[in-house]
Amino acid sequence: MHNQSVLLTVLASLFSTSIALADSVDSAPPASTWKADPLFPGAGHGSIGVGSGIPFLGMGEVAYAPTSNFAIGAIVGVTPFVFGAGIRPRVGVPLGERTRISLVSPILWYPTGDGLFGNGAPWFLAQPSLRLERSIGQRLYVNGGFGAIAAIGFPTHDTSGQTVVTYNDRRVVGTGTPWGVWNTVGIGGAVSVFDRTTVFADGILIMRGVELAGDEWIGGPPFAFTVGITRVL
Image (tube, rainbow, N blue to C red; front, top):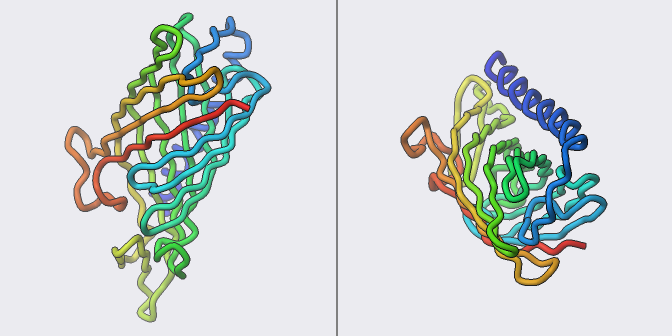
């Protein structure tokens, strides 16, 4: 329970920081409009996006930006093994006309870890990342940064009283709530193909310190990537 409380406290602190940053950027000079910007559709605008990659074979997002440097999206995705849904808040701090720091933090809820429609225990996952972003010319955008993945399972109990959590084909048996935190490094980019349409690609490595994550990582291979397209509404 102590470890679970620590994890939840860290996640709450990240969101408190996001809210504080959002308040501060409202008083900052507005950033120039980036044509290739998959995160922020512009004040008072929404966006839709679809993508595919690893682990998500398909995913979609509907987002809205109340200000030019804050947006939040509702996301759904499906892997070969599980279904997930959640939110993706993000806040940006302009450092200049072409440079920005953004905090992006998807939060996903997996209703079951036992197949797409199984009866297994649910999982909760958060993936905050801090990204340095740069626009190049009028239609190109690149980013790089670091972050973390925090996962926690909500187990059931077997007849012996042990906790049991399933994810994909893995069955974890123990005496406490399973959870873990991994660090990440990532890069990405985007190109504006039309005035309101952007094609993007993002990838991360999932690590334990300076090494790639091993068998303790619940999500399969220690990397993830997404290629997709967004459209400003």
